[in-house]
Image 1: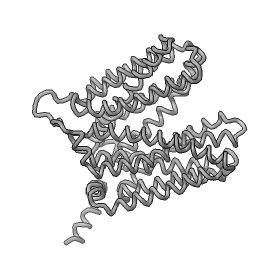
Image 2: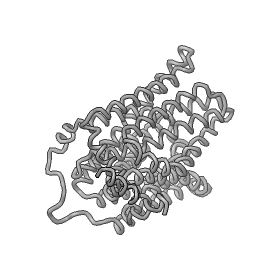
Image 3: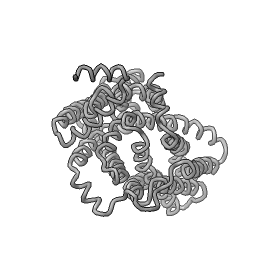
Image 4: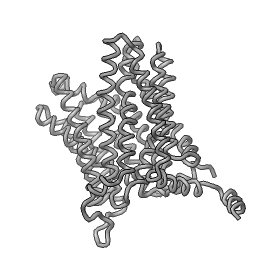
Length: 426
């Protein structure tokens, strides 16, 4: 039996429910997202500035919802928090179809953002909880695959539904979330209601603030996510300069999704049992920087595809590993809060990346130095890789990750190999 089947058989029903939820939450949202700005500006009558404010408000409240979702997971319970997030997003998306005034559209955006944010930390915490230690990274890689399937299929379904009324789009998206809420309620384990329940007693914020390994790791990953944000910010701007049809930049997202769907699992299975997590992150960050750096030589679509392929390879190293590291550093009774903070860190990195990328692109144009941003991105990736490798020398961070890595490696080995190792030790 191959490794894929072994990993799959050990997942269990709860984990598959969460992975299915990841797929369909992305499908339901991306069914709407590519068309949302167009709907707001053409059918709802908003100006371009108002449309940006409405969408930006949803992003801000997504981050706020992430913190709330982590807190609720550790206090209200995982299943309740997941179902609450799904139903809130269903209400928010459906509201878009019925309201037209700016205040009510802001309200729909806020509810949608909070619902999505609330769902994310308990979903990741659940993957960490339900996956066996040696399958944790594989489970998070499957999460990335599920998300990318949703991101790929969602816009296609949205395009088909767009031939009808706009309300049809929002109704279908809302029904997807309602269906997920019902399935999560019926298929996931019930939350603890009778003592003893493993819940924090208070002072959780101070406890996390004293967790130096997690804080240092989060600080570094802010810059990793800032580098990652250039895929959606700087690369599209470069594409508009070199492609005859700038709209074809959307194909780059399709290429990325296809790569992740087919390559994420084998790459994760190979690296997770051979390399230390910090080495995987360092390698991935360097690859992302190299992919971005190579854009400076891109003069046609095929060049961009090669650059994106290198970048995406690095992304496949980074994405599941970050979630695995957070799960290994988190205190069990606060795992939802840890993932909530990790989501906030991701948002901070995205904001930093957008602002920093914008400044660099502006300097490049004013100084007539078109290669400047891409050189900075490449150097940043290399520096971050060096820092992550250096963190392996810090016992407070490397030891917990090394212990989990050793356990994962032992459990992945065949009985014959384990027997030979025991003989050598004797």
